Image (cartoon, rainbow, N blue to C red; front, top):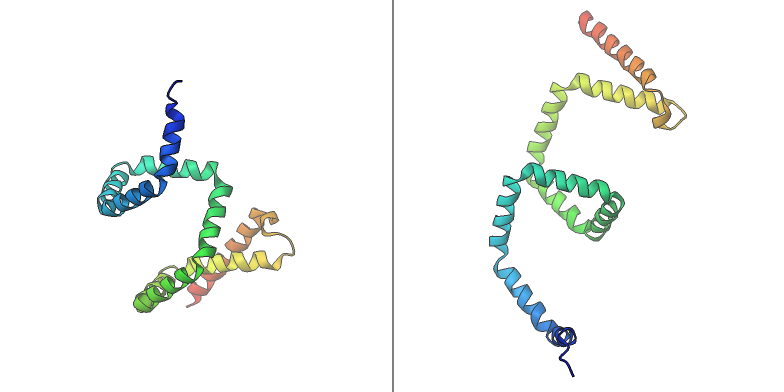
Length: 153
């Protein structure tokens, strides 16, 4: 009778499954910082390649990724809500000041976006079916009206 190495290995792994799991978890915890630092260094060094790989993966597995993200958001909804609330409490003033500054600097741009939105809303058809040329003409009209108002001031 020959010694069956595969069967022995399988039996050994099953027998020591819990020990292996515990050892792996312990090792994982002990070397977390070291591994994170190495990973960060690698990502910084190969930024473009990593970005391309992530984009390729996301494009190939779009439905799967979206499903995973949705599942994660549903699972961690309360945690995320608490995190956002805490961040807003700490940085509320700064965020309000930044948004006010943005609105002052980009008022023309914001008015154009609002005009596009309002124009598309007035049609009784799906947004994607509205001809782009029609929207562009409306935006030009809004720009001209703004220009005339500014000249009168």
